Amino acid sequence: MTNNTTTTARPTYELSTDICYQALVSKDSRFDGKFYVGVASTGIYCRTICTAKTPRRENCTFYPSAAAAEQAGFRPCLRCRPELAPGNSQIDAVSRLAGAAAGRIEEGALTEQSVADLALDLGVSERHLRRVIQSEFGVSPIELAQTQRLLLAKRLLTDTNLPIIDVAFASGFSSLRRFNALFKERYRLNPNQLRKQRDQDTVPETLICELAYRPPLDWTGLLEFLTQRLLPGVEAVDGNRYLRTVQIKKQRGWIAVEPTKGKDALRVELCATLAPVLLPLLTRVKRLFDLAADPEQIGQRLGDLAADRPGLRVPAAFDGWETALQTFCPAGKAFQLVQALGQPIETPFLQLTHLTPTAEQVAAATPQVWEAIAWPDAPQQHIHQLAQAVQAHQIALHPGADGEQLASFLRTELKLEESTVQYLAMRILAWPDALPTADPATGASIPAAHLKQNATWRPWRAYAALHLWKQ
Image (cartoon, rainbow, N blue to C red):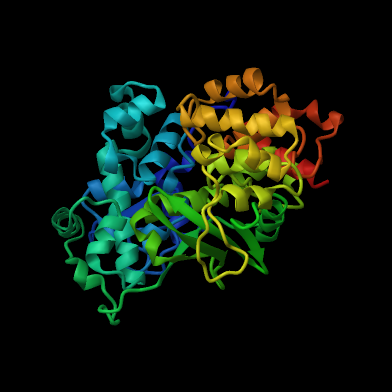
């Protein structure tokens, strides 16, 4: 499972003021989230799609990330709202290390650990990690984390009536005092000034967030893919909505995701109990629906192969352990496993009844439990071995984890075929260049004749695989 993603040069628009300004003048949505414009005459920074009057060219400077614009002294536009831009440039980073680090930071890694700890997790030195992030995003890891926290807080202040202290903690701040001070320093506003007129004494039961993407998005295709892999009781597709239960750290609840009418965005409704883990939750949703993908860039590489479904996405795992569990689960046995080992949970949806059984619960399952579920020996042994390895921290199942270590375990300990190893890399590690030759859920496969040209699909071979599975 070697990471064969090709390193390519940065797109020229990131280096050309002429192209950046032309994209701003034409309000080109293809560049939304790929760079930001700082306007010297107003002191704000905007997305390319901002509906405000186009500033004079001499007043514009361009930045590769929102964090870089804020470090330069600009504050976010209240009209185009940079916090809603798709991708925030993270998936567009040339370096896989920068992308993995930014993803971990977005999930809140620097809330509970240091930059040195994050570097250790990613298998690099702290100095190298700082250098890569500075090169890719124009800021330090801490500054990148602060910008992400502030932009999420700005969204919550604007779009919800969540109490301000809860907004601070949900955004990854450890204290209200620090949140207020940094918000005023960076945005020259008091958090209360962003509050719309609403009943602030009412604690919300649910929160609504929007996650933007670069169109097109094949939502029907995404739901079809997920429907074939649902963990009953944990996940469901209800009409045009994806539903699921969630457990992140000690927080439990549910989410419902559907397209936002009239916008290139998904509407995420979640129960308020998940507010403390909103940062990692939204990151997982983005990953599940591959919202940071750039269809135009992928389509240029795949050519005619992607012509019929330009909005096809490669869903990564919402939870790596859950995806592995589903992959090894024999047909018709998933709900029995969920009922036997999953924690019951109350939700407003009849289809959602349990949380995903954890690796610890599966590792501790007695022979009597397996006998009652009546799993075949081989998949039972696979999932039990995997659960023990996860519990013992022998392997990790998330993007940025040691791919070679995981691949070695899957090949040597579980004796999996290479296609299954590649499938798990595609979904658990979110590797866009993984090449699963067959779909373990449907049995669809890539014709041998097409495999001969797989090198021409790099670094998007996972997208090519899904296109060919559908032929």
